[in-house]
Length: 432
Image (cartoon, one colour):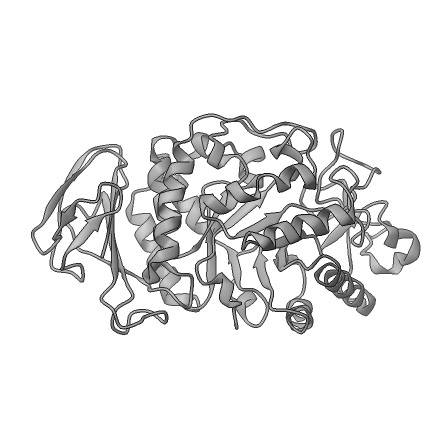
């Protein structure tokens, strides 16, 4: 993949425009762009902006993923001119904007149902068919065996790049749509401008000529099991080992502690990670991956947001914003933490507590990372993945040298034999 250069240090902010402000509009959300930039995010992912179907609608307002016209804007959020103004304002602040794109299915009353009913899959009785096995009763599946579907969808995606100057797409259930479509549409979009493509899926082949980034679902689930006590910390080590051995080095994996699916269906990040939440956030930014912040995380929102109705984000504890701000500032400034392929891989550091503590370096000096400038730069992270405090002694690893503590500024030399105390779910991040 040829990633846009502006993705080098990027972090993503998922903007739920319906729930962020009382108005729930692009114009109201635009007032938050400067705050989002100052938090450290540089890519704003807008949840679906299109009109929502009324047939078989869920709730009062419906699911944003039940689209009735891929070439129109949902009046709930404003107008095409408002969206264009939102993107322009983001660009003035140095931000990029990607749209949530639903290519697998449409609402029952999408314009295509009347114009091109042959574009849809059918059940054994010849009726339109929702995606099998899921409770998505408000949508029906498109049929990519029909060439016209490819052309319609690609043309609609091109429309938004040309019409509103958007910078790419987050693609819903990307694995349900054929790879030949994704590769072809990526080439068409890149011919207009360099775009960023994020797949809501976890499959390495999606990175072959189509997507810059994909969801790290397995990473999130493994960390959740460790935090809830249903898996030992070693499970996360196994995940990192398998990922590093089998995924392309230039594949960006989106690491997250919350998103719209988890928040409304499984619970908030506070529910899912409990006392381990700060440690999980640290790993989402300092470990390999392109980090995501979901609307309300930075505000300390502690409630599960309704998905089919209006439900305003609540402001609470600002500590998450402070933590993200510090970590994303380090990511932006430190070549070791840049996104694949510019950053450095994680290298495990031996410790006296391997069953509880994950320790690793990311070193952009020498030949470690594609983004190296020859300087001796490294980040060392130690994360206690257990509900018990630990005194950790480092072994003979790649971490020797003088570092500064990211949060205290203290100068330390974590050479072989150096020890530090970590509270339950505690961490240290050192840089040089």
